[in-house]
Image (cartoon, rainbow, N blue to C red; front, side, top):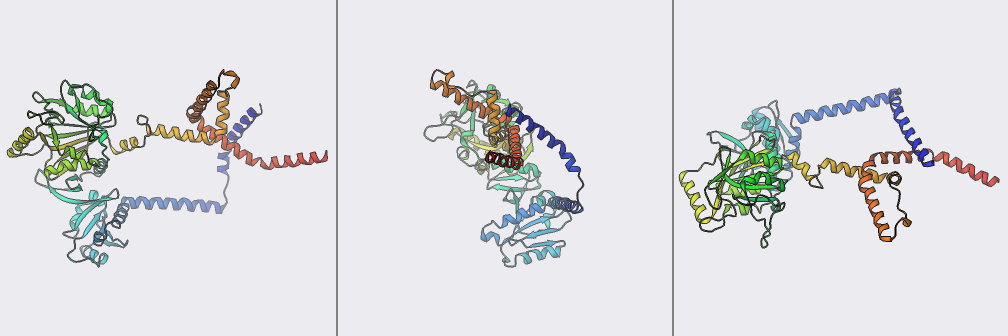
Length: 514
């Protein structure tokens, strides 16, 4: 009964405290307190306004670029400047020492390099490291920079060289070179950021499933790839194309790689025996989205399937694919395939299912691979004689960065991250307030008595089951209210400490008097 009265008194006092908070907040403050609060509020508002203004002008991007040039090698750092073009048409330059030069006219722009880099040699190339805001919002200002400068885009604490390339329409386009044989279009800032995030994703060989589309093959895919004993690398999985969409559910969260020729929203493939067949790309993309699978389509003019056999009984592989699968990231993977064509140019967009779609084509290609008669004939000859398929492009349909980050945060793969962290936070709260949690649980599930069990084994097993049920199930449920009550009881104990001290002294005096 004493415990029950204590809980009721605690809850009543907590409710009283909550009810008095509005009254405390409405009490008049002294002039000094009001002045201090107003100054603090005004300072916070001014800081927020200044921070917003700096963000609008891209100053944060300039600071990131300035910090980046200090990490460059000594020989490159000596001739490097961070640069940012403001919406007003001015240029801001920063050298490795943090000195800033603002140029608003062509004359001032000409003095920027001698002022900030007086030790730079006249013939040495000038490296200009541009903010993202400059490249995506004020690109027209790039023509004002000194001729012959080596331009770089600073993003995500890294820098990428900028290049002008010829498009299929005959014009020029600015791209960022992420790898020696991979460049990315700079059409949209958000899509470029998504492309960089995708290409930097680590590529685990055990999570990449290379499929061979073989009619009459298996109708299901195993959850984990089969590993070759000697090389420890994943083997090719044969799958019936008619069952492919339904089979993707068993490889949820992994990367699936298929090979074929893309034409008119169809994926053409040539099985080990028989004529070419096709399947609808829209159905494959929808199934990959539903199964949360990253879909990689390696384009090939002659769409033999990896792991099959050609007429010479040679193993079919995609040129560069075996090497690409050993690379560390998806960008390295595409770079290995692009080496066959000199360079792959990647364009990014959002597909119809809200995912990121990257298309890597040979430099100058926009939609379909451009090959002349000799090149096409030579590709076919190589395929038939050596069993090697030359990749003519790569299409990637993948989870966006936000979705991938949420998956990376998960401890248990199939449970949303917010549920897991809420569970852990509630569990931690219940452990902090363990005395209250345990008392509540003891009322719900009374402790075992040794006399109720015939043997010690059953008694200990019941204790273990009760302990884990209380810790892993009951504690997360009542964790937050338990820690609140526990803290309140501790607070109340501190408040009542003088009263207990007086009572103790009175009791001592009564004992002495008697």
